[in-house]
Image 1 (tube, rainbow, N blue to C red):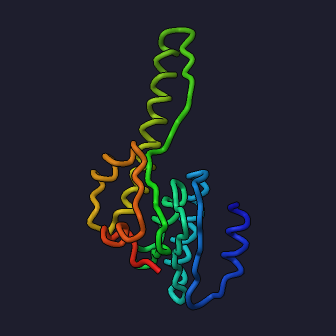
Image 2 (image 1 turned 120 degrees about the vertical axis):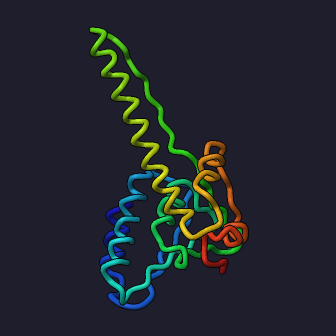
Image 3 (image 1 turned 180 degrees about the vertical axis):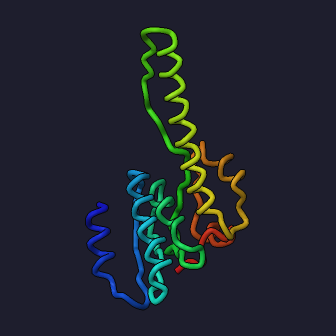
Length: 164
């Protein structure tokens, strides 16, 4: 997916409006972050281009992460589209075996991984709510149970610029 995104981004006009249309039930959050960083980079570097996000039907999970990299005034959803915001998920087994100090290091390493993942998640939440009436605390409170936001509600909350 990332390769195709890069191919299309590289082929986009060097000036004017560049609309990125998306519908997704989710995906790899790190790929979404890479794509988003490309949008942020080109938005900062190429002021002659305006990158606009147009979400259609469903923008879930990693799709919402990707959308968060667009400036709020460049985010649009089609009528009836739903955003879904949730916490990152992890599935891991933590084998604790061996010398006690090694066991502590294993547990601390996993705890550090969890903390770093939460920090990355919250950076994405901050991007999403910047310039809106939604607080970071509200997203953190609602995300564990999958927060679904209809397009008009997203507009009224200031998460997007408009509904088309």
